[in-house]
Length: 576
Ligand code: SF4
Image: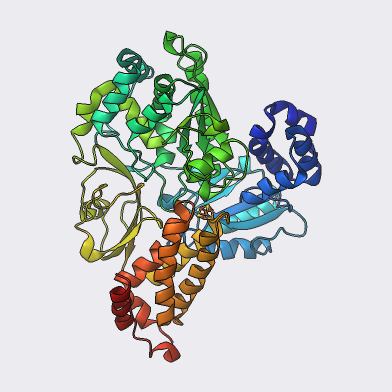
């Protein structure tokens, strides 16, 4: 039955700011966003038809063209491929008689690739009807096809197909310290804004999202900007290889929301948004329940914990766009728009959501804020180094015996983590995901820390069986497909990087490609608008720098005259 659009509009009264959430509902109900819905939403939000269509076309999980009544997304990150995702995809398409990315003629099913779904520790993974599919195999693909052909509702598929485990392999200070509901709020109210912000400063807490900006500084700046103010939580961990926030949102949601509430009370923000990546839609019911419980307990709402201060929390779902992990893109998306990063300055602490001063921190940061409020700066500083205080949650996946979540004090060596995870014959570790760095075996003494190797938490291991050149090529394609296209250095640069990556992978590289890689990387780093473009060349450049022999050994006969090693030396001299 077609969707009741009048009812949809009634349930989304905030106009343009609710647009993305309304579009998600339409997509789920109709398998696409039909023209009638675009017209209704354009009239409702006061936007042009083109503006609404452009939002639809921006997000991977929205579509102007019909998708199947069963729409299956298969995660296409390199770790899923290592675990056999290509065979799963092929078998599923074969059994269903469908071409990848196309809806079957009868409209029943479509199968798509999507970027990492945040389940690299239990891949090959996928999504169907907003629910996670884990530990896929060829046999399970056949069973899924059978259920689809028989028209079995996704709700009636075997529950174990959707099991999401959160294997915590190592706990340290953070994961050993739950915060009873309300304790951090009470502690923060007792300390007062100045006291609490000073506590964060003494603790040396830096944002766990990757950039490592001092949390106290962000809060102070926002507090000093004229209100009203806003808090956002970045739960959009889209970096391939990252999944630790999934665990925190499932098992530590109270503490994360408590940290957000503390932020609201301390900077004087009455409203907050928890931005949940679309791939984690399956966690949304749990988060809504936690929010409702905390409202009932007086820990959210018009008078938080009897303080007289309000703090209301909204849950906002993304719709599949890696770039929305960038804080200004996230803010655009919270406002219901395309997630195109904003020009900075002004920074979000001055002008963020709806132009209000905004503190944006990530999930892990808010959890640690709650813990610091209760246990103090000294407790936090017991772990880590002077510059990198506390601990870091790592999402360990790839070629390890025990993939999962590891808590490591900052300052831990890479090889220590490899030993914990049971990794053997390691060729390289990708620290921080593809926007981080590929670290070869002879550098595994390096330290996870802001002073040596900062990381947003992804720790992906590749043993000697793996083709690193091809893996770098896959990551380069990932960046190209996730680039929002707003700025030329990234839009054009990613396309050129893809060409170089393909030539390197097929053995058709030349000295000119190396030169282009270095020059292009420098340009993209300097002139790209956001972190995506600034780091998209990392996988390729790292592979050429550390694994030049792997590039050289695959050169086709006509390219063999090209001496990669000599060319690399020449280029390093010319472009140190
Ligand atoms: Fe968009 Fe890339 Fe520019 Fe970032 S760097 S704004 S992703 S085009």
